[in-house]
Length: 627
Image (cartoon, rainbow, N blue to C red; front, side, top):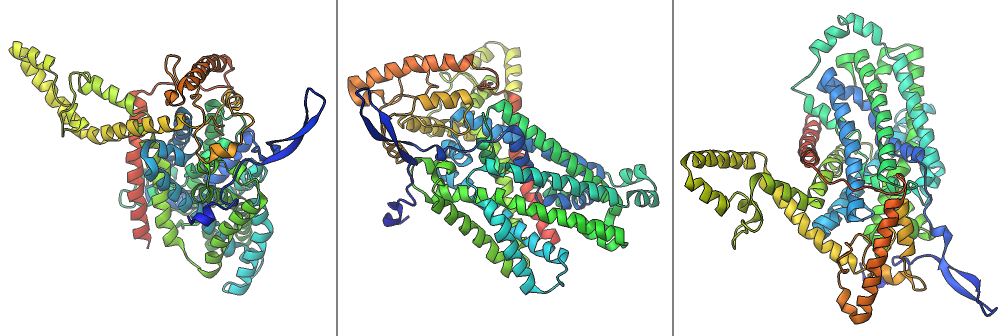
């Protein structure tokens, strides 16, 4: 960014403050600057966060689930829908849990803590791609649907563009101008009601009974169409991305009041359960009603069947779907706004994604919202079909954000624990197996220790057994791709150590996804009387040390300030011990309990990465085959 732009107050926000009159003990009064209460982020309940998640997940993809089941087969399709929902729920919890463990408030900072600046920009760009693609697709659906419902003749481009512009400026733009995600909870609840109603209409009016009877019964259909190997990748490409919402996970989690692991898990489980019920219902009924004639948009099949009742049902469902697009658009608009704040604004709060503080100024919020709106409106008005571009970018972005990203994050954040578990099975202690110069860490884990070699040479039967064991371990080592996972874990361990050392030098700050107890403690530890703008710009504060440091460890950099800094560090150490005791005494909903990772957790993380790669390939295959 150019220096004159970077120094602009517009792009270098500070904490909003207001003058407050206070009385002194001597009876005089004076004005001091205090943080404005308007800058505090609005919070939502678990029900509000659940509605926002459902709204972010379903979108317009629900009408394509019957087509996906047609391509995968009835049984395989239902199983893949359930599997994708389970993986999505797990990945949402993994992202927030690891962020709490590292003490970062956003997806991009979580990647930055383990993969450096490359990870930060990689995730930010993918989030922008997903958010912008969603905004553009929702406007395109409104353009194609609303004029038809209003009786406009097909092909009247002028009227279609006018309807799209006026309707979105009247409804979408004001909703998108809201500052906080919690403010969208009410419109998201309305959208969820409309989505449920649309599914009920489709299920009720689909000619399932006549179709099943004409094709030999349900058992016969399930037997012949249980799985289709030739086109299963097309269906997998549709289903695996039907639940993608990870790009908005941190924004929704941060909007939750008291965002503990337990409350976040409650919101994700409820949201994914409702989504599975809706998508399985419309998928099974839609496919059984039309079988091999099922189209990419199940509502188009209603027009082919004929009959006034069916056409009325199709128009009603289409109207409900179009209405939900007005309420789904702001969800992705918020994601685009968040990424623009992170990439283009200066200061610590902008870098950490504190949208509530940065966008407290109305001019910033209006400007960024208009940029996102116009950049998605103009292509929707000028271009009739952007599906192929959105499909490619969406496939890549969704695979990285929903599956590959959470798996890589977990392996890197808990890299130390993973390497210790690998050493327990495949290697000896670190003292016995230090790699020589020029030898990588992964290959050194395969070297037998001196002690085991001496034991093997002292007894011939034991020697043959030891050789067999080493051979088995070596084969398993490469079959399980452990060199790759060890490399990721080792790199994440080192990067995370550097990141924590750098964060320890900064002043204490409030993490928006911290539990209530953590927020209270961080608020108590915030600097008083000074400007938060210095902390935002990265100016080093006196080292107090974060509360997670052990009682016998001085905070990093404590010697830099001499005896005064040492004294401050000792006081901070004592206070951190009291803080930890306080956090342990908080109730179950007020604090988070750290659970050490197990082999099962690492296997799930690796499965995420593998499934993400398969989903990426499946998505590209489906795009190529359909085009």
